[in-house]
Image (cartoon, rainbow, N blue to C red):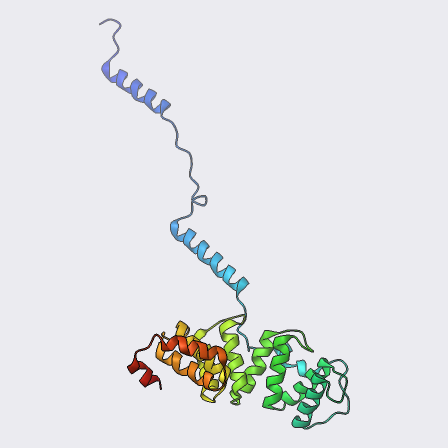
Length: 250
């Protein structure tokens, strides 16, 4: 044909036209779309940061500043008081109860600390109680844990039970297993409150496997010492046990 277009040229023109109309894909920045591995790392880091922000130091680990606190006398402390630990505890008791002197919890705390720093177990227990209750000192459960722990290490049953309480209910790192350990130490010495606590732990399965027979045993020992609530718990556990289990518990 006179005006015909060669087939080869026609195909070239058609290909050029198709290329011209092809929509261009948007550029995807690799930084804009992190890989799954990167996203996972970011989430993990955020979780660790949040954990670090909310994590509470384990009670009993005193800072150097706290360790030096005894070097600074509390307000109103007597300058010429006794140097023996027993006399210091007696003076602290007098200031705490107002026996023969005007009640002054701050002075009581001061004298308990003087004796506690000498290793007196009674003073350590008393000082722990003051810090736990915020009496005569600013309430500080870490300090309470420290002084209870010092007395507990010397075998004081009341302090051992208090350490158990702080492990079970206190702030910081809680541990039912540690609570059971300290309750057991105190209960073995015949400390009534710890016997009831140990019975409760066995009944509820906190820190130990649930064991109605052991719960009955420890409730019974506390009840035998006049603990009315433990007696009710003992009777409740008795209804759950067979005669053979009751015989083993006795």
